[in-house]
Image 1 (cartoon, rainbow, N blue to C red):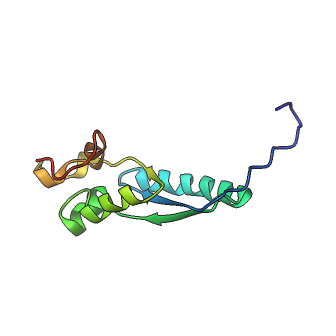
Image 2 (image 1 turned 90 degrees about the vertical axis):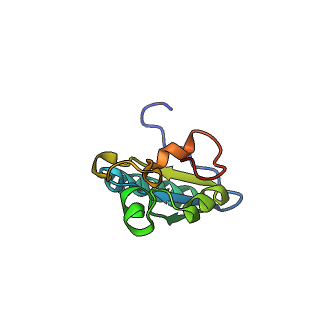
Image 3 (image 1 turned 30 degrees about the vertical axis):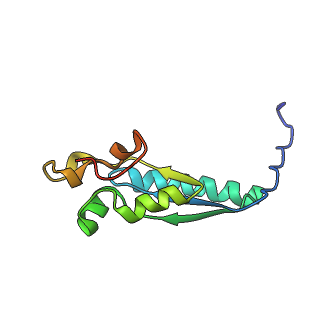
Length: 116
């Protein structure tokens, strides 16, 4: 786009999209807040029809559910149109045990159940 040219309008979305936001921990919530500001602005400007929901992963999930990636979150991941996945900080996690894997561990391949 040439300097000084007006920005192009975004095309209108044909249907809404459900986006699952996984804010993680450590620096994750700060990154999530910045990403959401950008996504909200683009969504408003382009009428993209993005719908956001948030779920806890990482240390917050571990403290509440006993695992860093609870089964309900895994089911939502499979059901939504997109995911905003930000960093987790495993430095503060308790000593390793099967339920304490970092959430990204589950994304390497299709998830078919616990990987202990």
